[in-house]
Length: 98
Image (cartoon, rainbow, N blue to C red):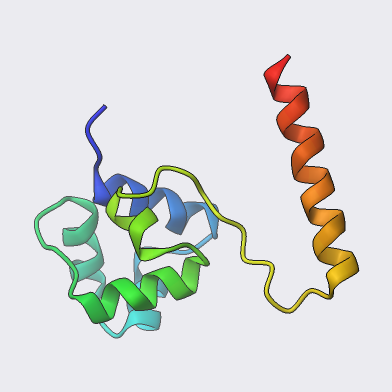
């Protein structure tokens, strides 16, 4: 399947319960610009890519389709919480490999 930035952006927006207008307000563009991004009629600037990555807690490489996996932002967690998150993730990987 070909990578589609617009589809990825829309998926992240919807997963986060945001409208195009909500997202547009947060990144400093109009609703129609967000629509153009999702329809692949425009490409966001590097500055907008950084804002999107920050809002959705993903890397710009993920947004651009360079990186296939998702990452979870665990900044702000103490080391015990980080270990707990890693343990849960490992258990889920094992479950899904069966």
